[in-house]
Length: 479
Image (cartoon, rainbow, N blue to C red; front, side):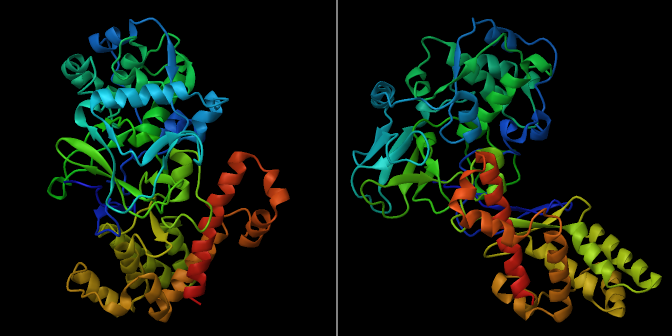
């Protein structure tokens, strides 16, 4: 039985590594679809790096778009940016929930009598609440694979398969987007009770999946929908180098909201997907899934919310790789030293440890790019003679020593030159922020002032504050 895949640590320096994880979990521990960011939050569709489907005529697109325009419903439950577009429903209507639960029984989606779908007692919109105390390992619900909505289960699956070549894109989302568009407009769609839980997003106005301005907003909304709701089944360990599985919609599972310290986890098996409790859940408490091991900047980009410090234990701060080079250059006194440092940097680039656009990623409990950062500190700080020998061996024959480990607890034990370079890099990084840590602390400590900030300003403040706390922790460790 597959659970969630492993956390992938990305340095962006030239290569991407998968390393052992701290918790079961593809790209950071996602059950949810990982993505580059919600277009409505980032303000630019191009920032998503998701190309439109291949241009040109397609019978699949023509068939989907031939239906008359109807209401397009989408969910704001997990993506705050969608609620800003659609607005929250006024008062809770029990009819959609009752219809959804009746549909669950018909399709064999089994919900434990200990849980309830509700708007009451949840952090955002619909959620799932414990009606009775739940113990770790208890099954909360099971979703048969026949109830999943994907390009393979929708009513135009044959058409999408025949047109697969025309619908290819870097994201891999286009077939699901078309499946959703078709099913949402089909009056007799078997998923209609599932859609009824979604608030109204907008009306379809002659949708065309092509790179034209008039269809840009609709495409953006659909991408945000898939980003906020869809799941991606992780690959098995032995299949890690294969193309990722296509996204799919998982009724009931997408009702759950997110916490880093979640109390439930989605498990994948050949016949069904099972949501299982991972912690004791007291009666009346909300049940939380995880959307992945995500820093606050990822949560705000993808879902429009953050977890206030110190709740998000998966939060991270970046130190740009070129910032470490800049910090090292500050210590050079003559041109020969500068040239040697650039030679060291070029060697690190050759080893694919650094890159001009890369970043070292620092978590609250670990350095996610430990191998890259340790090698960079070592090469930039080693004596010239040692570097020449190391370079001649192309970096081979280097035994990693325990005292060179970049675990958070070991940083104070690093060589003085390593600590100084790391400290100087942190100080340069902090200079890139418009405000200092005390300014952020003052804003957060004053409820009156904090309340005057807009929602986005509050969330941006939480992102900055969490990053600065990590960076200041590094300052203390390298002091």
